Image (cartoon, rainbow over all chains, first blue to last red):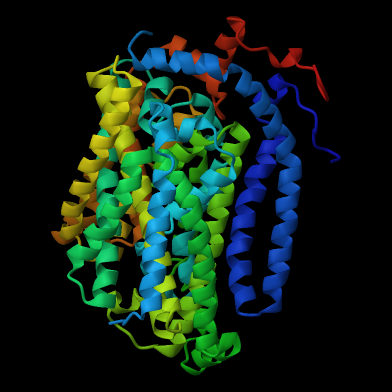
Length: 96
Length: 533
């Protein structure tokens, strides 16, 4: 998608970027429109379906923006997780 | 009272047996390790914890709570239920940070983020508080079931309270979180389907959307149909300031950890997801389902209002959605409906039994009493504490009467004074354990004072809840901010470790620079822009 990164190196993905900030705006908006759209649609009001349609489009957009980054973070983090878990257990057992 | 035909009993018995068997089947997985008993081995795909988020937050008292606010405030009451929107931002902010910390519980996270005596005090405090809160939640949810069974079968309330929670405890004791999450998936699917069926059935029974709206207009109550019908900026029973306060609490709260009481069960689901991405999607999708469900309930309760518009007694109109199901569904389906209500109920009970036990086992028993305990021993401790929580919840349940009153107070006491500190601990490196601990202590005192004691003795007038929130936030800050600045920052070694592991959002510049200096992370200028390194 133009204007948004789709390829992330692990180091880049670890930093908070405009993709994250935009997701912080879109995501609550989806919830807000979902709450209203579902009510109006159940009351068979035409703008309910419209609201749900906008909601669906925003969801698609949000996933397009944030999913490549989340994938990159997850792939990189899984490699380090075992080491971090060992560290965690040491703290738990007062060894660290 | 409702009378069941044999088919109704059939549905109920089959369903309860299926739920218990489904949970118990995972006995072998649950006993493998502590991580299995409390986090299903941290290996779940996103849709399983998502179903669990949804199922857990659909409790027996939830339709009563939603019925109460919608019947009283009309469709604008939907915003009372919108607090779950904290997950909208949390899914991509605090969820990501928490999943990377790998902490079993929020209490454990405190000792990863903070250090020294303050961190340990905080961990002990939050663990103890969570054991208490889970018992408390089990009590009020159990009592809601007691009330429902009393309404349906005229049973004494203690029977409904104890019977279904005890049945649920069978698979929680056997399989731990594996049993919880697998049963939650099954219960979530059944519960959502039945919520759709009953709500639409109720809407049709009231004559359909057109007739419901026409009836409400004819009653001169058209405002009930407008979700945004504010009574003024600060005046009336639904001021715009309240709405804006709620939006701030819900949405901005997603940057923090512990800004909502729902954070604690969600934290367990976050850690049980197999990757950071799965954790984010599970929290987001589970809460989206909750938002949609609340809207469905809202319209159904509106339908109920059009049928029975003059009920004054809160306890009566809180039963609105249940009455639609039990009064309008045909014989044979009523039992199916009740079986789904049992599903709704025990999905919440199972979560809080296992969650409370995780705090007691991991944060209290293991961390403070037996750090070298084996996994086998800890799983057994988990089972014993599950049983203790169950018994304790019966006592709490018998002490509660008014569902809505308890819920509002519990939500308030948990969010008001510690809302901002719960965000600060995530986004600001300088906020320390003593500051956070002080905010908790201040909140406990201030919430009782501002909400109950001072108005009761007429020292201050009884304040609207949005004003209580802002007052408690400011008063709390006057206590915890000076304490934060008068005490030392956290140990830099601990902060650097935490930063490298969790990569928090916000004001972390000194810690980031130290991590770069130690060669643990790359400086920004070394990153190749626009593609692979």
